[in-house]
Length: 307
Image (cartoon, rainbow, N blue to C red; front, side, top):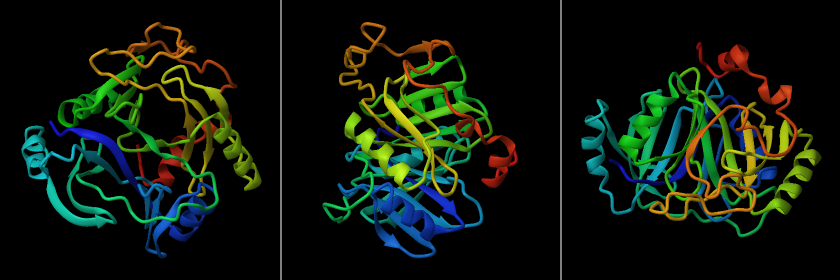
């Protein structure tokens, strides 16, 4: 298998790249290390690329990068992927700090860039905006969450942290409770993306900044039951759902097999399991708003999907 260790960056198509770059710099607090009307590359203050926006007619997420163990030879990715019926192409210099990548299309239709030995980019130490710590996780729909979960585990080394019934999978590739989510639905639609904040005070600051920029919180604040992260959600200018979170569960030792104990855990120890839909509801906070639930066929059509 390909030993994936962390989430890289997500690539989004957008009809207005400069508008998205301005929002993610001024409000979210990333830095544009490349910026034009055709392409913008946004990085965290610590120099990790988080998002890339490329000019196009729709607003979907066609590509995602994942960072492999630095000792993994990308030449071996072809052997692994061919055993799963997929082909791979080796590419170079596809983003700042990325010398080479193995690129393939996963079973739900998302192009995946496997990166190795990624170099941080130069950024300023200060700046405005919310300034998340990192790109934490991303969720996609897939025709069957079970099938795509099996592929990510068997081919890319992900581990299952939890399920909500058989329709919503939480997968990790490092200590964080989840790096990728897969939800039953049309293949390859980005459901939401999430950025980690330092602590509860940072969530409060983020809420004030969103309010100052007239971006309503569409769900939260609250604490999820599955993963136990504190959260707020809003929509960005291209209508993507964005989660800002803190205090997510950590699997600090895979051999122990349980998440680092926290006083809000109801299972002691908290181990990976299948949650029922009702017991998976947030521990506290209001239910998701109609604006969070909004989407359906109209939103999918706007992203260029028919399903």
